[in-house]
Length: 324
Image (cartoon, rainbow, N blue to C red; front, side):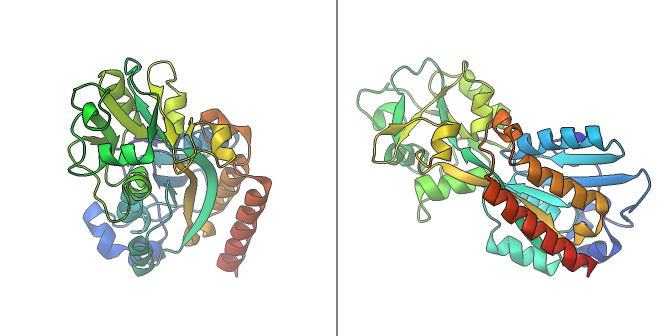
């Protein structure tokens, strides 16, 4: 199993997918590649969300221990970066996403002969964090978050509440290619608003962790898994959506109490890739693991048995179609 922030080499894809993606993939240097369908040279290629990455990484580790002849290569590119640069051009088999695929991404996939199949693989409690020394704040309202993160919004803590410090924000958040950015913008700022751009933007969530750890006046946001790795060195804020302060937790996300920042997590599979036995076997393994404690161990809520069955039914139907 190989995990990385950016793909180091083009994956093996079928000739049909190369031809379909020739225009979009040309800039990436994809020429002359062909997936090896048998033997020892078998690979599953995944890009996309850094939020979903811990699930995929844990699943891939378990899978490759049982299937040592299959290499699973995972890249953290952001949900949108994965869709537009790798999955829809036909370069990867799966794309992890922390929000649903957008219409323009679906169109790009269709133009390249890629048919995405959506599977839910968990639930996240998107978490807003501050430095542990920020003893003036333990809970924020959604409107206060909007004031902090909207363009031309609050510039310092005291702009939001008079009793907060007269100090400027030190903000760390998701990059614009991230599904977390898209979800946060839509849910907190609103579709008509604009996310501020004067903050440290990154697709590397642990960089956000380090930034918040290093500044008393910092604030950041990311998937719950990255908070659960660092509960003693950063502080998670409760969110008041109008019914009182609710802390981010797996239980609160599971019960639907942590609103509006609970969200489903996805992986998308290229239907064409299911012609490869290695890909279809890995996808089934991934979906089955998504219903186990493996997901909670990395910091998210596992899918239910009903969701698992829905996923497996969808997978079986797609396999039947490509075999048909």
